[in-house]
Length: 383
Image (tube, rainbow, N blue to C red; front, side, top):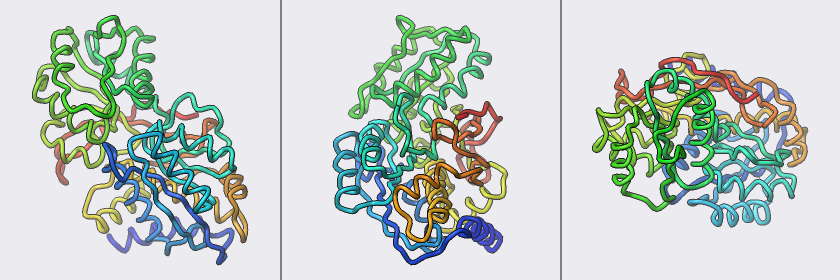
């Protein structure tokens, strides 16, 4: 099985590297959380990225690469400091990273002004305007909520309570659900028919909000929390409302390292996401096997989006000529066709995000332990 996986990984690399090969070193700036509530996600990104480099001889597009990692932290100021370092001191030819929408909004105008391609690995604000140098291997923030809204509306007989964190990523994620859900005729159980917003990032006690849900008459809850907030929310939800009101969520709420920390509290939580480790395709079989061997862990979406960022740059740098520049790499990204990803084949849509399927998942134990297991395909988004 190991040899089979290695063969597939090398085969995917051959397709990427068949246009050019050179000795010019390409500088890649990385910006992921190394502190704060999303640190575990930052670690996940780094693992996916490094696995790709390890399996391709630390080269992208046939060229050696050097990287510089800066801390995204919890939002804008750390991201502003980090992107300045990557562009003004490190002189990156491409930038990869971020999880939070606040960080995207800090990075996007800088890379746009300096004409440096930026391959985002996490949440992308839905109202981002200038996309000339911004590409995402991840998702637009509203997608997870949009994808599951009609399923919840037709499966839950009664009103639904919507809740999320008070920042742009929370607004986009939750409102993506709310807008689609209510347009289809669904009713919110929240007071005034508007979502409930909790402080961000400094909140540890969700019990007062959960007590409000308990008396709201809600038949189900839709929530978005990630990282440390996802751990606290799901654990406290199980204590206060477990077995009483079913929880549906944007998949980030139970994705990655948080699931292990949530433990049995996450059992039975339904979510929507664009990846699950049990997807049955050759690229995922090879990727999941190689990831398990290197890290002794089951891969998650964050590993995949960082892997795919490396894949995008591998293909683009290969097509950018003997001496790749930021401009030639960006032009090559714009011409990329379909990519064979662990989540399934995808290509960039008009919004520079993947056209990709979204899956309904449920947390339960399988042969590998507790996991987000695919129930069905919900829809395809991103065109």
